Image (cartoon, rainbow, N blue to C red):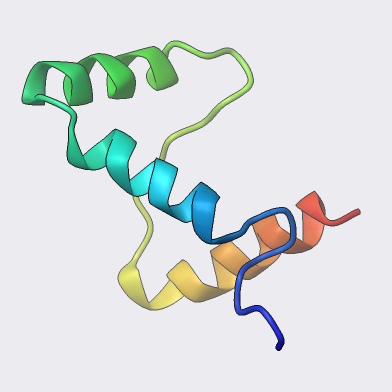
Length: 65
């Protein structure tokens, strides 16, 4: 049986991520976003919705190298 999960992911990991974000309070969500914004090696930007698939594909290609 083939998996539809990205490399390094499985059903258990997906469930853990869903549980993490599904159980967060609004304050915890805000704190996590603020922490991400303060990272020196991370950039957050708004992109047009129609470009999102290309941006995701570019990021995935860079991560798989």
